[in-house]
Image (cartoon, rainbow, N blue to C red):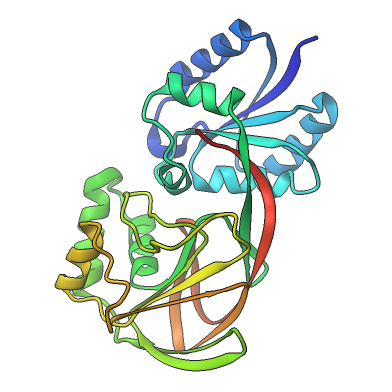
Length: 289
């Protein structure tokens, strides 16, 4: 008896043509005797459509071709179901794939997505919205906002917006943080709410993070001068520096003294003054190498 697989593909993620990828997935499924149902996202009622497909096919896995946003959408649609999610990185932001150390070739990723074992991964709830990877307040969220508003995509788009964001950045903000039964104030340029270790660029921001430990980290960057940025980019995150504070917890609130730009998994979510955060332990099954 053939096993059912739903293949969810975001046709516009990463500005990449997906026709060759869809063909490769169909060939792999046929060769390995899977019954494949293909669904291309439209941006309208995708979660409901995927839930309907799950009811129809009752798959053991859903394979997702897209970025972090598509993966999160599928995970949220399947939160009431016991299903493994396999990832084929195909977005402009593939942060979760980088953190999972997924390989670069489609052949290797197909084997992992369809056949490999899995971990039960945590998610984070922030003001009622879910995060699977990295969210942040401050400078990087400004960059995400500027990138979304820009016409230039890819590496050079990010590079241009990184320069613009650094040169036009706001003053540091004061964050009142309550976690682990303590309340402290920090002057910060950026606060990362981290379920994992790395941004999609491969930069490690949370060296001690684990996606399945029942905790998240608040990485507070008090100063973001060129020296500190250089250390972070080159993989030398100064965890013992006076400029960096890391708080590990399962619940926290952050209140800022003025509205600060905020993003979840690469999606700009406006300016915020209050974030209420808690861990969602073992919320999704993700296929890993």
